[in-house]
Image (tube, rainbow, N blue to C red):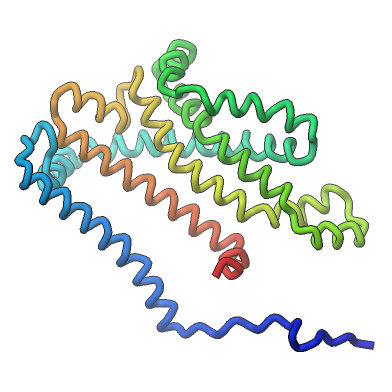
Length: 275
């Protein structure tokens, strides 16, 4: 005998979306950020004209564009150096943070043991740690990657552990009713259900990872956009410093939206629920 749910308990199907509406939303999603950036650049230019700041104090957008063009061979190389350090440290943060989060979610003892250590590491001033890392690891890429790891790992651990401990009760009951093993429960239910939380932490961590790479390059570096900013500041070349910061902003935006695209591919159902 088949049981039919009462009409009032049946969830209505979402209205169909037209192709024109989908394209329109995509275009609007690109136009709004572009318009905001253009407005901010225009405001920057107006303030520069209104206050008459000299170029070495605050360069104009044209000065920054000229610096980007004049150093078009040099800056992309430094961009690549910082990008590699960021991605390597971010990958390590995932490789370290996700297992730690699993341990914390499944063991009350480990949660009480590890959380204070993670909080202490997160609270340490990273600018003060950078010279120590250089002393321990030398002037290569290692200190920058470790700096990225230290800054990015905490949001990964926190969001993943929160997601794993927030499995809906009905899913837990379903797993128990099917007599699933702990491994099956984790692979089939708990981790997939935690993915929206995981990606929240990853998107926070990727922006922090860029900051970590730059902090590492402020001390004992000979390449990277952070080194360019420090060196150009010492030489009063503010236009080059602003150009480097613009490239760092571009890097953060691209990495963030790349993660958002991966999130839409892996868990499209979460986007549907949010909408």
